Each structure stands twice: as C-alpha cells, then as structure tokens.
Length: 300
Image (cartoon, rainbow, N blue to C red; front, side, top):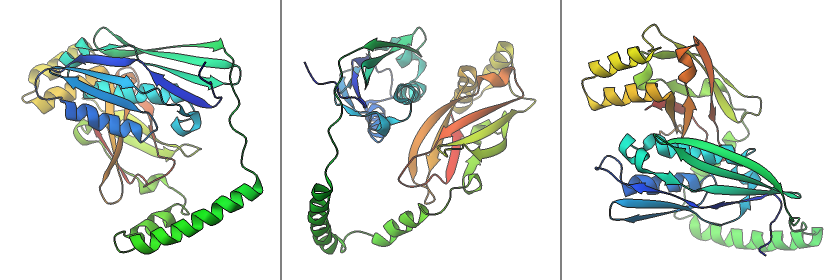
C-alpha cells in the first residue's frame, strides 16, 4: 500500500468536456493549469480534437503549501476555471475530480462534482485511515553540513548568473517583505461593474492573508430576474452580455497585478447577496510569498 503521509494532499480523477467555438481554447486550459500549479495544485491537460480532459496528477504535496483549507482552495481554482468557460462548454463538462488530505489517523475525502448548468458541488467526508508520520527533521550537524554545501553552490551560481540576472529588482522585492502591507497600497478598480456597485471600504484580514472589500450596490444593481432580463435585452455587444451574465451568476473575477503591472493570478468572489443586501464583504486572497499585489481589477 502506498504510504499515506500525514500533512499531505493528493489530487485524482478528471474533469472532461468538449470545446465549442473559439472563445475558449486549449491554450486557456493550459494557462489555468499553470496558475493552479503556482498554488501547488498539479493538473495535466489533454486535448483530442474537440474534447478536453483535465487530470489530477497523483502527486502528494504538503497541505500547508496549498492553504489552511486545501479543499476550499481547490474549489476556488475550479470555480475560476468554470467562470472562464462559455455556458456551452460548462454544460457539456463532467467531473470526477477528487482530493484526499491525510491527517493523523484519518483521510479527508473531497469530491468536486459539476451540477446541471456547470456549477460546482463540493462533497466531503472524513474516514479513519492508517497514516504515517512525516520524516523526522534533520539534526543540527546535518543542517550545518547542508548549509555549507549550499552556500558554496550559491556563491558559484551567483558569480555566474550575476551577468544575466537583475539582482537589484530581486533586492527590491526582498525589501518589500520587511515593510508591513497596507490596504491603502492596493488599488481597486471596479471596471465594468462601476455602475452596479462601489467599493465602500477595503481592509486587510487579521492574518493578513486577504484583502477584504466592502461592496455597496448602486440603484442600478439588478435585484430580480426581471431586472437581469431587462439588462440583457438592452445589452448591445458581447461585453455587455458578459457583464449581465456575471451579475446573474453572482460571481466576479478579481485579477491581481504587481506594482509593475504584471498579472499575478485571479480569484473569484461571490456577490449574489447584493440582490438582497445593500452591502457585503468579499475577501480576495493574497499570496503568502512572491510579488505583492498592488492592484485588483474586477472583471467578468
């Protein structure tokens, strides 16, 4: 039996469907897989003619590397993918994707199922299991020995790579890590949703692992199906239709950029409660390491 190491998580199963038209392609699938890999979620994308398969690679990764709640992180990435898909693609897709998180004496088994219309249903259960403790940490002498060897290798690499690598930019990013992050340093652009809701307040969570946005609907925010249908009928181009569809789904994509304007990643937040509430709080996850988020753009 393959060892079930405590503190790890494994992906398995697949999500499959067919590509329709050219608004969503194999390249979009592979870009999504690359973004997921940055969060230690590894998928293989296979395309054969007009059909595609996204397979969860059975590679054990540390649960902490994925996040405090790995199943939620996986679900968010899948919702991100589904939000990219046109309705015709989502409607044809099927999912047997699942994850298994190993904790001491138990497995957390999570199934990610697509419901009619392309929505995501997350089903989870905990079962008892024989698990193995992670490897013992290195001794002090082993650490010192590895550190000395690593230092020697690092010096050699630095001398060779200094000709090609911009270490000044790297030092600038390192300096950022010693400066407390502030919500005021992150600009928020409501983009096409500016007429539907505003950002009344922005603040960091206590961690701080998320930017918490307080969204306030405007008088023009569609609160009923009739309002949505009216907006849809009045839409004159594809962007307007996509905006209405996003409001109907109650989901908004948050694209995050660094201070140089480079795209980092995207996240999905739910805004459906604005149909019944004047305000709601939406949390946009922030990276624990790497370039800081300097701007969040809301889009469909």
